[in-house]
Amino acid sequence: MFCEKCDTQVEDNALSCHNYEEKNSNNDLQIPVKVNAKKIVLSIASMVLIGVLVVSLFGGGGYKKTLDNYYKAHEKNDADLMYSSVVTQYWIDYTNEAWSNSAFESIQDSIENEIDDWGCGSNIKITYEITNERRATREQLEDLEDNIYDWYAYYVYERDEFSITDAYVLDIDFIVKGDKGTKNFYYPDGFLIIKENGKWRIPRGHISNSFYDN
Image (cartoon, rainbow, N blue to C red; front, side, top):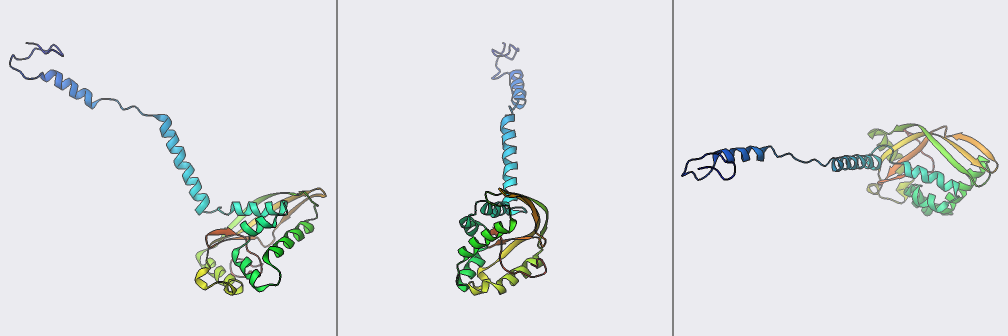
């Protein structure tokens, strides 16, 4: 007799067709897998984006938003922005505790004085460029943390309540353009920015140690 599926001749008492089973077995092994290239591209793009975000948040350069806010606060003469998102908390707490005028008043006066010193008038716009950055070593961070704690933070914090986990000294060139002219400036001692208790902030006051001296 013949197999009903492949017309191969088989014995009369055969329960199955070996030829048909062999062909179908090979076909099962060779079934092509359809690859969705679009999904692969999107998946790779997502992985790259996540990597960029991780580097931005936890690696070098995560201070950029704080630095942007520093200049934006000057452009808008916005002491609220400087107080809430830029200046170190230890300095705010120390000033409110130790000085007769509040930290907010001091920040407001500082912004206005800097704008006056620049001499470019009002309605200013600021552009800046980081020309170099120097990152603190572990030893320098410990020295910086001790220095700031001894000068300021010990007034308001216990020692284990204050930590600096990262710091940079930045060389910054910036341009101020206002209704009275345009001028170029830079920071001769560099620009210190630190990661205070997990947040990038810009310190105020006197700081002198192996990493930074102003």
